[in-house]
Length: 608
Ligand code: F6R
Image 1 (cartoon, rainbow, N blue to C red):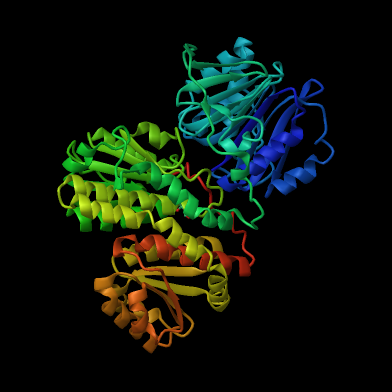
Image 2: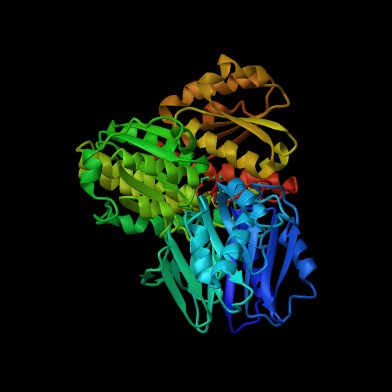
């Protein structure tokens, strides 16, 4: 949520800032703005709506000579998405942008109004600009003014700040919200995420909470809130600029679905040795799995659905009880965890605020934290005792696809390794399991190749306004993800239901206007699922079944049938998700939706 960019260096940067903002569009936003030094003043341009609106307003400014500036995409929290509320916000000497929420802004605002400041927006952020200006006037020192203000601001934040009297300098501050520094030759960058600067440099620093960076063209220095210097080693991005580009696909979401087979290989291969699933001792030691008596999984959204898949896998193979908790719900009650509990945190971005806060609560109880994360060095990764990374590269589309697939692949590996170290799976059985696991990229690729079949189905289902997804156990977990995918990108209302539960109330909603997508991949549950699908057929619903090959003959009565390749039951969620994603994608495309940036959504949810 919100994207921050900043540049200082030899290039003229007005256009660069706008282009950098475009690379962060996926984070979700509803207004955008830039501020840059030109002819001894700070010029600010802001526009509600898409970056294209900002670009139109910038038309006459895009080529002006400027070598230092900041830019922002805002996801509205305090005050609607208007030009006035867009960032950067300015005071007499200071302009700044902000990602996060200033909790005590009303108190600060009252103080500043008393001191004669006038507010032009409804945002919490404007108070920070005036407060820093207030201290700048008092001290005449840019850094000191920022630090004094920080000592008074309560809340979550990343800031990018410039001062009228110091062109060529950006002060960057990180508390909760992510902020990276891209390190170039004679130029430096500030950004919420790597795609904003990968075109120019692969060398970067991850700012940690409580750090302040002073960014100039030829130097970057870091201090803490007491001005103590901080030294850190730069990291190097392991993927290329092209990974953050659409590469000929109409949408990032489609590109990312097509990348799933290679992401699965990249994620699984390093964790297989001599034909057996084995994690590096540092990322996940065997003793952690062997000693696990009960597990709690914390996550949000699709990552929580990946947690459901993890639960079924671990409970089936390891006979260990697993609770899956929506992170925001977990936070709402006193945690019942102890130092004997293992907590698995799942997050693509590694920055989801509720998940991070839930992790910290679990940690405070003494529980051991294992996280499954995609973004290296992210907050969740840093707060965990052990991290297993999903190696998918950047995921740009708001709706997760390849990262979800990588998360569930890791979950099978954890379940299998746990069963092995607990003595519940022999080495031979683990070898067979591993061999089947390593077939997944190929099986997934065979499904991605069937895209035209799924597009044809999308044409049949895109006209409906309500839809049901049904499944039992692992298929129920997969249904939850299918339903979320459809609703978030196509805006069609859908429900995922445990199939056996439907007749306890909800079947009253089934009519010929409410089609049903049933998942039938779990061998022991097939007959029951077939009965459930017959029940909805009898209520005139159009029915699509997505099934394992052995269920095909039982399902001749359904209207549409997708037969998946054969795989063991535990691995079927990796296969069923591909048609679910592609059907949702094509339904959304047929309905003309903004697929990569669905309305109201953000890729990285850093507010509560
Ligand atoms: C849906 C989706 C979201 C995320 C959720 C958690 O397609 O992407 O539901 O799964 O916001 O995000 P992470 O995994 O970054 O913690």
